[in-house]
Image (cartoon, rainbow, N blue to C red; front, side, top):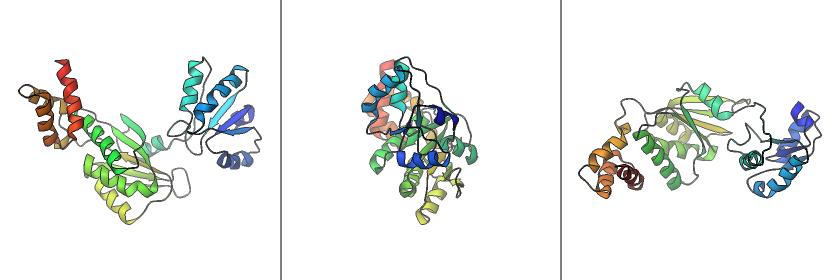
Length: 259
């Protein structure tokens, strides 16, 4: 709180939400909204203010700024202009969910929110699954809106495998904090019958060692490319792995160019 008292301006994801926090601690620093719709427009004036010696803080409604919240473009602009940027450690739902999940903590990959529409969400997950078939082995983390959680978990089970260990963390650091662990299929079934509420983080364990879908995609493609065209090799391997043909074809093209 000392930082928020000492700066000249506080940039808030939502000034109404931040006002409650600032009132609670008797902080009267001037505030201004910074969100996805105005961040680019605000940057020139903010850089001028910093250049004039002002100190500016960025806070979000919950968790750590920039982590699925505004601020990245501003920080990038300040760094590019030679300005000084530092951070005050605070809560981070992705790391806390990983800590509580009981799943392997490293390596991990945080990917923010998946696309809200089913087709786009399935495509993103298929690309991640293709990366796993090519050797990626990491615990994966996403935020998700409560009204989309059951649908997201069902897609996750279909694309990545329903027997993968996973966890759903809800309302972390709050009164109704809850972490539910199980397979993806079990969690999908639970939340289909019990709609979730609050802030959600989903953690998916790495591919199981005996998972036949996690075979080396590159190895299969290289073997197929020895005797087949790129198009035919991609079609063959896509059928074997159940991955989207477009995703497999793109990787086959890359491998063909390397040879």
